[in-house]
Length: 274
DNA sequence: AGTAGTCCCTGTGGGC
DNA sequence: TGCCCACAGGGACTAC
Image 1 (cartoon, rainbow, N blue to C red):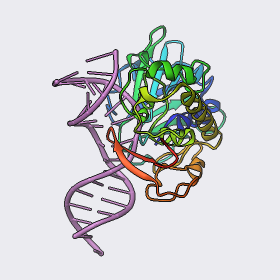
Image 2: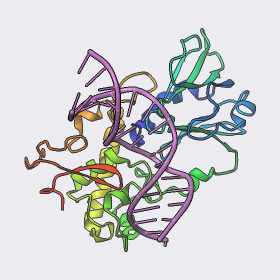
Image 3: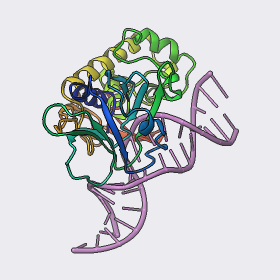
């Protein structure tokens, strides 16, 4: 399930294939994913060159002179650059035909079984409403322990829920929130407003370290995620708490607890995390 | 403003 | 073996 490292892995994998290349056409096999695909994708995008492949939060942006195609992988989405003749499989919802580069024509193909993903359009000079309220990038200098401390004052929601709020910081989903809280020794159930500045400094550092490392490892492969070249990610071998409920804590040996928190499975060590 | 709950979707896997 | 149903997940949305 794509979180920030998986989206970044996808971006890095796609960029060499897409940058500087013209989109020739768009084939929609479904009119909608999570939301209807806007008419600009078929009426404006074709003919334009992709100047850059960017990521903001968990969104990918294919920048052109007219605007940007905005893609979200949802839970189960993946993007591949394939020969145009590659047989269509179930849930291959969208193809963007690419200007030939050498031999055979190619397409950028969007597959998304659960259709939690989206393909939208952001005209040049505008900011799409979905991007307007987002918090800072976790790997940027704008995000640090002091920032988390200030934003968390007065918050009674569990610190894990606070961390997963994309208005606070983007890209931290269920997996990495659990892992970062374990690394920082903070209980996911603790009220966000009851975590000290010192501990938020440790937490912000853990988030940065874990995300950067996961990106380096090519993301986490769980169920659906595959990178654009088809390779799996390798971070799942490094997970210390996520998906390990009932197993022994790697630090102290105690059985890892689990409980739903805001309708999300949450795993932690009640001994190491306070 | 912050918080809690609901819904969207479909493949997987555990239990019976 | 086969069926059923809970679950997984991000995030928008609604209601309080």
